[in-house]
Length: 440
Image 1: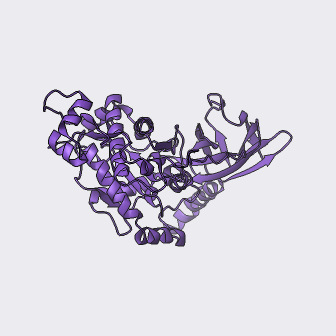
Image 2 (image 1 turned 180 degrees about the vertical axis):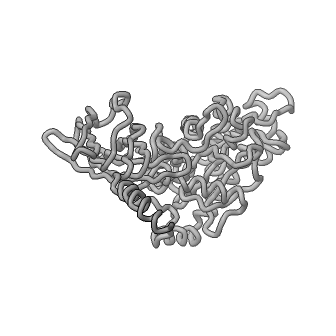
Image 3 (image 1 turned 45 degrees about the vertical axis):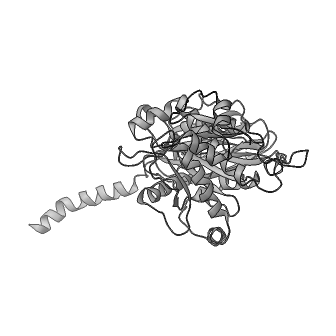
């Protein structure tokens, strides 16, 4: 019986198996196409249904970039791409070798292209990323004032951006939008202070790799690097703002460790060229060693404490002390750096605040007050503030437990001068109110 079954059905199953083996592998599809413009480059992203090999080359006369994606077909449209303010004049596509997708970028000017693939990550698909770097070298701007004394430079880093939206909150609220709004308001607040200059690391909706953010802060010759975030937690009842400094020996809490891990995954989402962000190479080890051997970490903790005391006056704090975690974006060997969590975007109540421009302004003012207070008491040598002690405008955001007499004693001014400058007729003050401190 068994031999009869083999004679009758065996050839059939063998034929089916051979047919299945002979079928070509399923082709990939380009399911979506997106375009981002940054100050120094343009990013084109293809969302793929699966991984696909690709080749990129350039042509001249006129300048073109050609991308061949193996065994892939186009299921998206290029017509809706906004090409204004980009080096791309037109996008064309067609078949190559009967099965490959060929995309041709007709250029307005010569660029330096770079491409890489990103594998599927969480809810993000496989992607092919094309970066077109501008060839024009930007002039390095000096921050030294003509008079000799320089401004104190604050580098403000709005987290995430472009391909990486960050955490999401109710109603489609995106972290990248919230933190950019707060960062712009912080820049405006700081630039109202004499002796301060603020620079945005990210001024629009585009992605910058984590190490690139650190590099930009150093290139700005910043006295402080502030990274602004509004992160998420797996529990919706998690709430409160916080301030973090880097740690080379582990996080100070489970939340700090979770947030650091999540932020460090940004390079997997946005793509920094090196897909394995977990590798600890000699360069990174050297940076961490330098951090432990210099005063940078201690300065970061001091500035963080000043900032934390101010934001505690306008919102709930997750922790009442500066926490430490191994955030990649804070790994600068010589620039004090802090990361500010302005609230949990996954908490419905805090999400409403983070969406509100009024709260964003209060948060920006509190951050500015904390930064200015620190540098007013410890101005770096060679700065305008060091040469003009007491002339910078100082402000204090009232926190829980503050009194007029206590604030006056803290800044070594009289209560009457404090009340007169701020138009206060009684001793009643409210949490979140900002007072201007007399100059002396």
